[in-house]
Image (cartoon, rainbow, N blue to C red; front, side, top):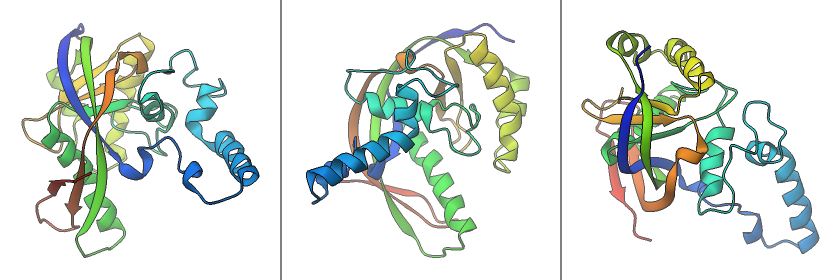
Amino acid sequence: MALPRDFDSASTHRLVPRVYSDETVLESLSLPAGVIDSLTELDAATNERKIAERGWDAAIGPGELLYGVPEAHIVNAAFTHPGPYGGRFNDARRGAWYAGVELETSIREVGYHKRMFLKDARIAERLTFEYQDFLADFSGEFHFLEDTEREQCLQPEPIPQCYGAPQVLANALLHSGAAGIVYPSVRRHGGMCIACFRPALVFHPRRGKAYAISVSAGAKPIKAVEMVR
């Protein structure tokens, strides 16, 4: 396994669905205060991020998560909501902070997965999804894939089967203390991505612009338009 190398990149891009970009929508509901309190308690009992922040998640402890900084809940959610199959460089137990070095790379990455969603759901029409861009800076030593690792870990399909080899590598790196992986984008030729394993290394997380991304299940291009606030 190759030694880690320095990686410095400011303003990387992570696109998050706008519906998930706020702390909570409960306060906006027109309900009595007692009902809001009860719903808030239920949310805390079932929300994976809040469960981890309370120390009840075996894969990531509260000592690793962020507190008292802007957008801490967004960063923590990336690590505590890994999804049923995980991602390319994380399994279903623990998430990671994925970001594109270039905005277009992030657009192509999320657009691909939305396209697969429409295809699997047999939805023929072109649909538009709203995303909030979260910027973050990175400076440190990260693992860069070797040639053999690229061949094994960057297979485009089928999902989730193609995640098997990269998840094995990522788990080995995670438990050896690695910060994360820098790798070529699978969905955009020439683009670069980062999968950061440590919440504390997501420096200066902040909101960028919002985008409406239009996708169809067919071969039409993915289109992104900046949204007016």
